[in-house]
Length: 239
Ligand code: BTN
Image 1 (cartoon, rainbow, N blue to C red):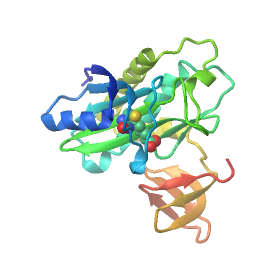
Image 2 (cartoon, rainbow, N blue to C red):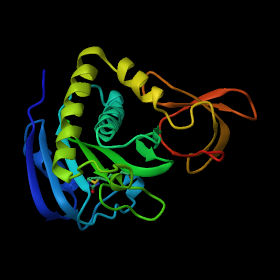
Image 3 (tube, rainbow, N blue to C red):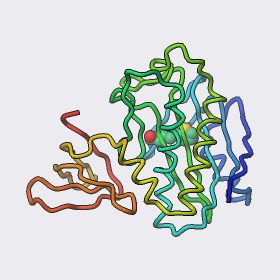
């Protein structure tokens, strides 16, 4: 089944994510998209602030995939491969783009976008922030890597939505395997040393795999055993 987009664009909102969650509660259909030009209270993962000045893409997509709750985290990988494909359309050669677990996109090793997936009733809010015209310090924006390509928020948004529709359909019809393969082919730090911070415990090891559910598989240096990590912060000391 293909998704029908219904995009609502606002000048300013506290957070597109909070707004889409309200709409999810009210029963709006899948494919409702809330975009705004700036956010006053943009949120990132782990309750962090997502600084949201005019010039970048901020949108949240309402999804009702009807999948097991355990599989919903895979949607952030669907979004990552869609964003990555949209970035391919505007980037010039000479820059590297990699996907960092669980859902960052790095360009030349710096963060270019973030993804946030949150459950609301039987729906999900999939939030996407992409740096287009500006980026915080230590991050990067697409303008820096797009050469003379014309770059504007709304066409980029439409590219993201078009790619997402294709990958989402593939995920719904065929499962996670092909999305996982696409993600792994662009993975940041595959087979490189990794440090994992689980809050109460830290691990050092080698990033070996993304498992069939989207968990990060790490071979622990001390024991040689592999563990699957579902949530946490990861760092690549050598990259
Ligand atoms: C991250 O921490 O990497 C995820 C950032 C997600 C930011 C987006 S911007 C649109 C949507 N609205 C929000 O408040 N957050 C998400």
